[in-house]
Amino acid sequence: MKTVWLVLLAAVSVLLIGAASGVRAADEQRQDVIYYCNCGPECKCNSVDVKPGDCKCGKPMKWGHVLKVDGDVASVCTCKEGCKCKLDPNDASKCGCGNPVKKVSLKGTGMYFCNCGGSCMCNTISDKPGKCKCGMDLKKM
Image 1 (cartoon, helix red, strand yellow):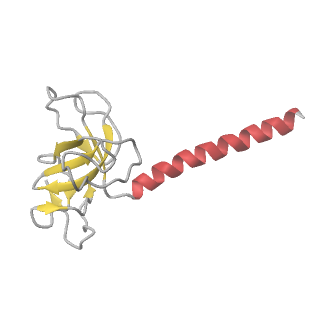
Image 2: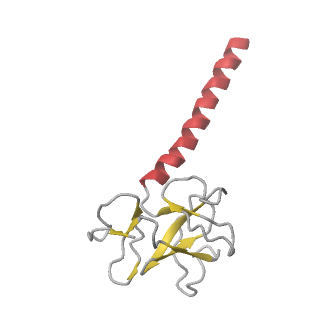
Image 3: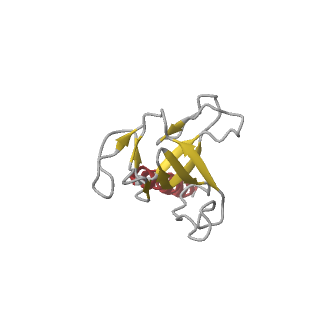
């Protein structure tokens, strides 16, 4: 009987780990996910990446997804990880889910992003050169 419980416990553990890694794999396939420093207005480290990690100032970066790029500034959704909402059509300072939009400067970060004509809603960001969803080459900042 003890063996059956151990086998069941192991099976449940494998399923839970697989589900968690499935969420990470789905995020890795998205081209709009960005990690940014969210230490407050006094912080000027401007850490940005497409992978989780710590800011230059040592604090963990926050997950977000790009809603729009204007010039070299990304409007980022501040919702919980995994969110796929769009920019609120009635209020550009909010995500479609109601959270405030965070403005993140891409200047000097070395990131590649789509900027197809001043204001871009393709929301493609990368740490490598490539193509945007609209077919244009990603621009390096």
